[in-house]
Image (tube, rainbow, N blue to C red; front, side, top):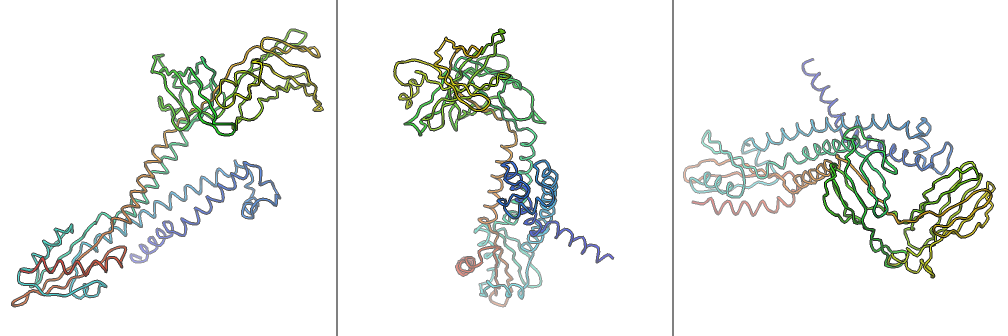
Length: 468
């Protein structure tokens, strides 16, 4: 039992930390991620022949809802972490074994069995000079003198033995960053017009993700939009998306004016404020009925990404059985470089009003000028205001720096593994009457052909420097 139990335990470790299990878990994670993505796009309906075969196979197990994938995905991640843990144990054992091997001394027969070895003679005292020559070349030299012979063990770039283990450990850093990101990530969407102020509070976001489990408190800093800088080279090619904002901390102290543009966000109190891609105009429309009930409707007209589309919006009137089909024409477009031609002639602002009934029939109701109103079917529609707007996306994610740090460490581990390759040299110096016979050999953990080419040059250099 004292012999079989460790072997069984070792086999369990080899299985749990093996590459086969790693690849199998990564394939399962890939299938689950693809399944979830396709479900979200509503491609994998039951019996949908357009879905890939492996997705239809997964559907057979009832995993055709994103919520049902949460548990198997979490189990797969947990198993992958277990696999990673045991693979690190395996790597640690191998590293310790390699370090013990390259640090140990070798006998003459063992050195002669190496692919790279040489035998030559030196004058008396050559063993000491040989050890010194190896030391000057960056080798860490150990010398043992016994039974009329000197044994030398020399290692260069010994830290490279840790490269693979270090690479595996960086996965834990990346996983930690992903977990922190999952617990702290928040994203909110805001639209502001010049002169308006946004205060970072949960209820002030136009759209937002769920409140994060950690660090989800309001920051209460303020942004006041001062200027919108939107321009096009020509319709279809955006020249600039930028804004100028005044920034205030949670106590109301002015922190300065900041310029925000694509790929140049504002960072404040753990929040990155990105320039959004949505621009346009917000029209204030009031709709009132004969009973005096007034509905205030902010209608958003978005400038299309190519800068060549119509400013068009449809707003449904609750309880009226009608929808307003609105098209904006405004001279304010003349202020946007590259879109001057869309402003038209005459320098006026108006909204073309159509109505759509429940059957989709369209009826033209007339032009609605700024400050004016039109009436039809017991309703009065008034054009109250028009102002431009810009959009901003605010993101908090404390895990991203950890993930990037993990990736940087991962690259460092790869660099150590492939460019800091350990080399080991062993020598046995046998003392004779008027000379010393040297048996010298060496190995490198990688790039064996390159080492074999350099080994001959190394032997010649060591012989020259070690002669008396």
